[in-house]
Image (cartoon, rainbow, N blue to C red; front, side):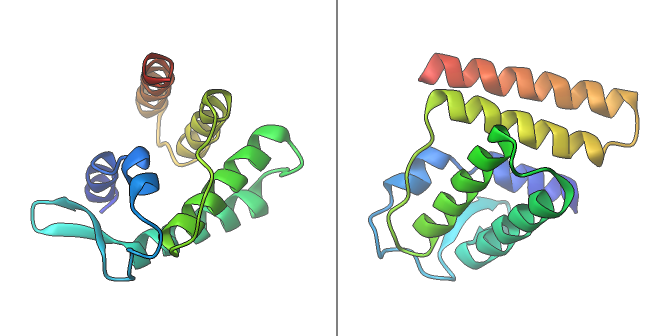
Length: 132
């Protein structure tokens, strides 16, 4: 299940989400597909809500990087709910990758998986630097 969700999530571009005109998203709007599977706005909102609660319950959200990540996730919620959200700055995007990397490591089952998480985080940060 997790691999399928990751496959779908890779097909979602944050830039594309922010470029959708306000008011054009509905709960059943498909954000991404992967073969016969798809991810709707409603499913994404539930996932973002879960992610926000997980961070609040498991981390000291007074730390700057977690606060930036929460603000970003709330911005995604706004956009998916048909309101205006703010795109993250390059520096903030790096912090968001750090938080996602830490969360992935919490769920990792071994050293190999943690190494893979680290490689993905470094690749994402390089991509952010190239595109920003």
